[in-house]
Image 1 (cartoon, rainbow, N blue to C red):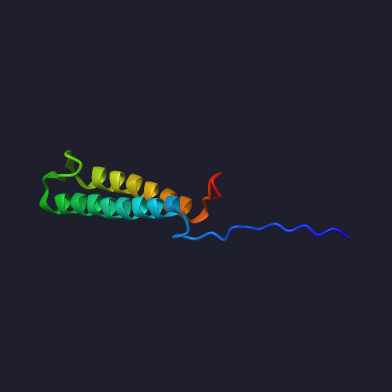
Image 2 (cartoon, rainbow, N blue to C red):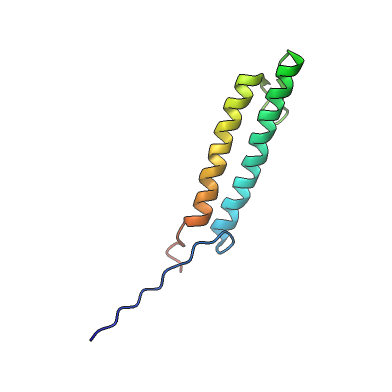
Length: 91
């Protein structure tokens, strides 16, 4: 009788340098997305466009929410990649 063994990697956030980097990217993108949405909301309350120093464009409610949703999507992709990405050929 033959026995086959397969070692599977348990997914985790802080297991490899790639997952640590992807987690940092996800955290920065989350903060930037929330900041864009908040700045757009504040501009809508003031009834004039607001300028975000990081982006450099005028934000109103629509552009702030659209940009924030895009950056939050990038954060979600980076977080999923950090959790599920397999290690490279070096391991």
